[in-house]
Length: 240
Image (cartoon, rainbow, N blue to C red):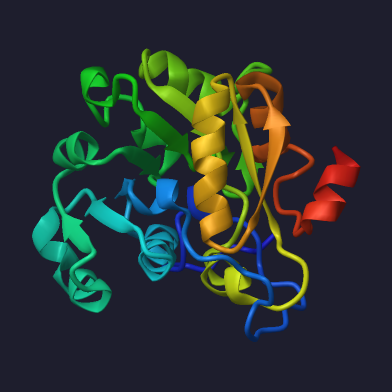
């Protein structure tokens, strides 16, 4: 696990470092699926990890709507970089405009971030990590952090995903040569997991289903055996 570097990342957003990746054209890679490319993905949280996700989504042919705590004006430089496929809004507006929403904010700010009705029936990707202190998993009494997110947003189709990889790896690993690295999906809605898996595949990664929101989420979150592990699809499937 990375040691804390002041100003680098919020502890909730720290995942994997790079581990011996080689870069180059990815053989056999497919373009965006019709399903994934037709969706507008909302990303709430535009720190290093959220901004990186936005960049690779746009590069894969997706539209994104971005939001953060400081407002749309603060996102002007990122929007200029991303071009017409990206827009900015406040969190509630982004949730309303998006077909799928990704939370990349500190876990402590998730509860109350949005009115529950704006994510009713939407796929809500919980990419947050619950820490009780720097590098220390929060004590959730044996529950998965995403289970609590599902309780705070009843009616949302919550999927735990995109929370285990450091932003530097996320930025380049989808275009790296060799076997694809795994991103995981956990949830109780099979169709929602399928939608998230399609986006993961579009981005050049392998989607690996870890099971229901409780057991699969625990595998992925801080303290779980899949957190901070750089695994290929074959390695992840063999472990699970």
